[in-house]
Length: 553
Image (tube, rainbow, N blue to C red; front, top):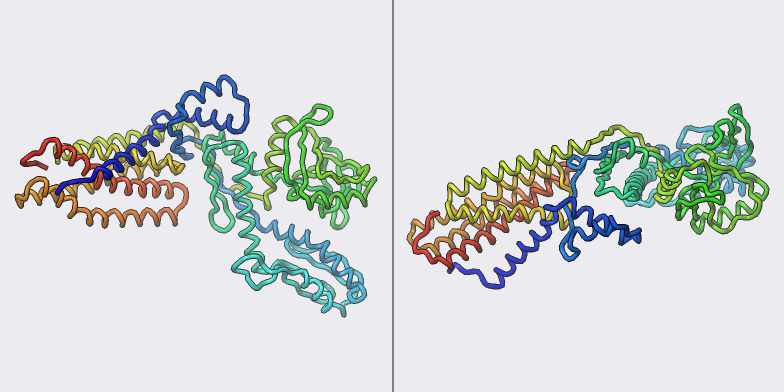
């Protein structure tokens, strides 16, 4: 008999009410958005001004406040495609390896003689020894510095490839270590870009790795691509170097030295040792502050290992100058008056308040491991985003109206039940999008419009089966029950195949394709639910009330 248990009815209506409750905030998008921003200010311990309090009271706190995040094409913002110069990391690794190689070979000086670093291509370390007959011993010493590659694909391989020719030792990263380094560099770059973007409070950025050495960055709500490049395009590489001389632009560096300009005085140049004592990786925190003169500065704190290294260096170099270098410019070059073992310090320079705050953000997020080259940049204006939303709304209204009219004309009262379920279906889609924090893009709207057309397919199958069952004169109740039971397998088959397609699109695609796949997949789930349960429950409630002897579908 046509019957649905009470607990089943309560569960169905409960799920519908929950989904529509989560979808409701999207009807009041600006108000709820301001409420969420104000709630974030309060949660982070910010100042609760009258404006913040008003925004906080603009939406009841006991109601859901999750919103469907709008993508770049709907909200406006900036789009960048960056290429990471992973080869830069190879050179940095070889430069950092030189002190270890030098110290190891010095311990074997009786066998290899004197050692001297030679000029070499980037990513390669060359060392000349004075006693060529000690090459085998020298190679063994350097190879002992190799470590196992820390990746599954490089298991059993060493990090270094060491060879010798004549009296010159050549050291490079092994192929397995290069592959592991490339993967590690890309992961680190993606994470640092995400941290920098998150630091400024942007909404739902899309930061994804593409290919072997590229990163896709889409940030809705930001002013322009140039603004985004300013935020993430700077490496913010902070290093501390020993100073070997100072003078004008005519200074020439010696072997393994650099000549860098002063940030405050373009006519002042410093000659520095190329290998730094400390780098930005040794920083644990950085905060904007003001120095003793009331000028903007940045306070920093070193890690435990960094503090220990700097303490040992300052103890043995009292009276010597050292330079604080940021992205190729010397911020300051103070003289070490006494051992510095506190693990903290201050960076002062010609900063504005905004500049010191941005520098602190960049340093706190960490230095990019390699330079990024921007291959593509695009700014989507908010007006264009609003036009896209308006066009999507028109498409949804036209498609929805056409489907509603068709179902009402074709199936009468049963078509009305299907139309109610269709409206509930759209609400459930937005409720699910809000619950999972998904980002809605223009292709996502296309997925919703497609779902509107597909949503009634299940109802059409059910109603046609009911029509056929009515011809056997088994009575309307039995015809409705058989119609739903016999159409169920066809509905499952049709929607499962489409759902598999949506999953493949999500796994294999990226960006807009994933947005389309998400809305399509969620739409399939809600369509099956509303067709097999909501519409059936509506029909049952009507049938229990009217008890008709005959029905027309």
